[in-house]
Image (cartoon, rainbow, N blue to C red):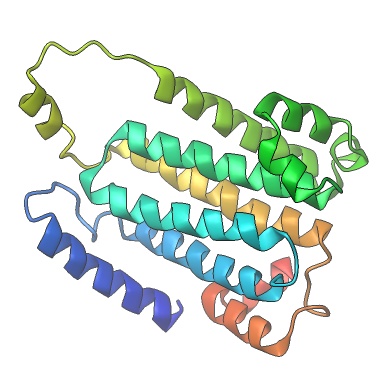
Length: 227
């Protein structure tokens, strides 16, 4: 594993211990999730550098920020917060995808979700499922919809305000942890495989510095499987 990611994990663990001393969240228990988020941040940084002269950097920077917010919210875990971030990440990726199939970034930023869905579903990439494009889009559609429902739920609450807030100070249960892990895997697969393939990002087009960094983050074998 990349030494930068291991160092980031160590710094994050100290941060959690200092700022969330009463939190039930254990960095050791959720190490895989934390490391995966840091890995995605590192990968996103490489893509931001490689695509610095394109419109993609706007969305990639948003996604990077959303990953950092996920790390911020994990120790004070609440399903609403994590769901809102999953929805936001899915939306940013879908808006970036609209740009990748030929729409202007201004149009993409203003386009409602249902219109994004409509326009992506009529593309050749979606119809032919090139580079798992349809599978990836359908997963993002699903995450956007499911997390929107969670965000718009209005749970009944008979506790007083302080007791209710104290109830936020819990760690993800096994089911929630598994769902976060699955989400991060889907996002990683989209960025590394579908987005990269559709935008001709590979070992021949990447610069030397980008290749070296990706190999450090992913490992040589995983890098070769994607690029």
